Length: 230
Image 1 (cartoon, one colour):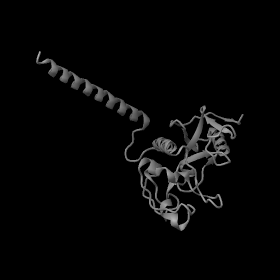
Image 2 (cartoon, helix red, strand yellow):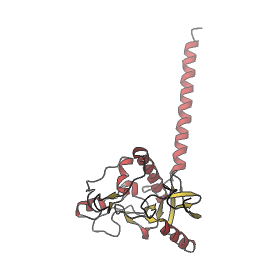
Image 3 (cartoon, helix red, strand yellow):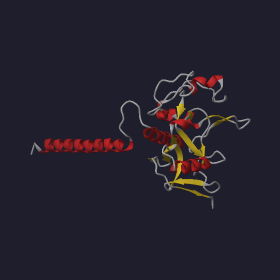
Image 4 (cartoon, helix red, strand yellow):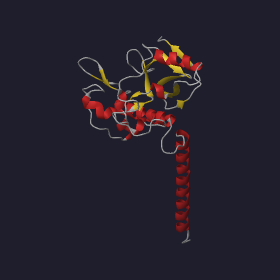
């Protein structure tokens, strides 16, 4: 009888260990399916997945997707929404002036600094301000309505672009279309549609990935549909 408590303890310990092993195995399997394997520099697909995660964190904290940083007196877009996301994945940026344009002297250091969040294969080497072809360039572009709102966030009053049956938030573009990551520039819905039509007959497509609100990232082939508000 005196061995029963000891047996119970051993049984509980074994059970807990089994649960931990199963949980760890599921954790590893989940992240293996979420991220592609790579050596050194993540591929663009991983970058887009991390971007989707950062957008999700931002929306949870602030109740909406990020806007471009604007001049409150003129309404001019000064800095891209991309500037607001690195801190969502615990990256620290150099100091910058959110009251000045992206290319103003006070923001040049920031423009020439490419956060890990926006680095991917083919855009991974050290950048300097003198190297304007590569300095701080990103392939991640938001998909916006003419009003500047994110595609699909106001379907009652604005058209929605569906790619593969879901509203698209961002696209990952080929190297030739990259932009300075701090510059407030994105793709309009019409630009995405025009580019998708051109890509159909091109051996080198421009739009390489589409990111949706649920975090999924898909490569071509794409199907698309534009729906007007009801």
